Image 1: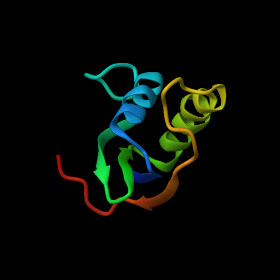
Image 2: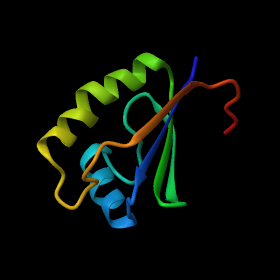
Image 3: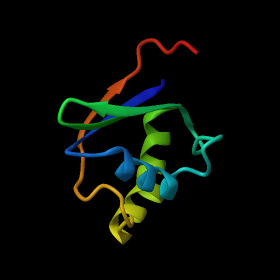
Image 4: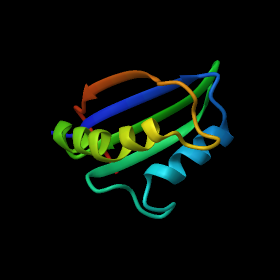
Length: 95
C-alpha cells in the first residue's frame, strides 16, 4: 500500500528546500527509488513537502539510507531543524 509523508519546516524557505533536495534526490527529473510522487512549496509560516512512496518500507529505506545520513552530515544552506512530520497510508493515489 502506498505511504505518504508530509514534512513541515517552520520558517523554512525555498533556498533551504533547493539545497536539501539537491542532497537527497538523484536529479530534478527522477525521484528516489520507491518514491512515486513529490510536491513542495511555501505554506503558512514555512515550507511543506509531501512525498508518496510505494510502501511504508520504501519510505523507511529512503529515510534511513539517504535522508537521515545526509541531514546528520549537515546540508550547506539546507533546513536547519527537523520537520514536523505527518505520515499516512494512502487511500487513493491518482496520477
